[in-house]
Length: 118
Image (cartoon, rainbow, N blue to C red; front, side, top):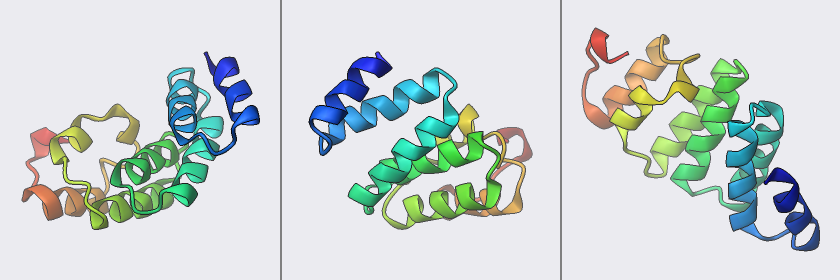
């Protein structure tokens, strides 16, 4: 599937839908560095899209780039991301869930966290 999307993007580099799909495919395949590159491109194209910024945070967290992941997550929240329960259950964010900053970001959109939520 990744190969087909890569070909599509060579032909139509501005196909944002194909780029979004490719980022998801890369992440599913464990190609986190490739997924991060796609998410960074998407963030350049759609800097005010909360889902794009959330996915960027996930890619950074998967690569243990904690501070950058939390920065991206904060940006996502600033532009409207508001699904705290999804954040808490998202395994892609496991590398940042233990931080106080993550807990503050969740509380910012959903009130204080309980220890069992982490």
